[in-house]
Length: 96
Image 1 (cartoon, rainbow, N blue to C red):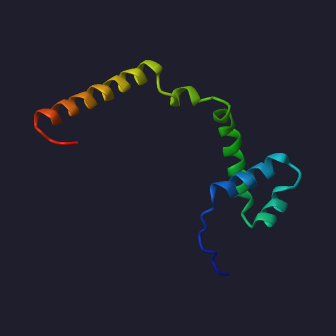
Image 2: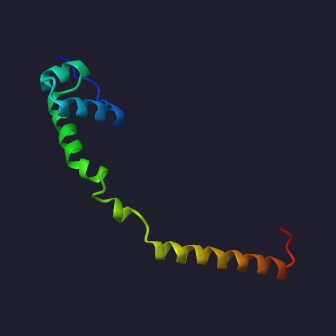
């Protein structure tokens, strides 16, 4: 029996298979045959989908968003640096 070359599946394919497993309309064996992947792999993708579902609905979304105050400070710093660059360009006689 020859070994199959290791395959890398796209995330869209993994999501499609995991959603089919979550629906429960077919058994894992049927899905494995239909999508040509091992049943254990389908179980893993299904588990990861269910565990990650909380993040979709805002579980970690608040942590990813920058703080409004921090954003204002960064914009102010950008403005300050732009003014300093303009000033130094004028003083050094460089044309923009």
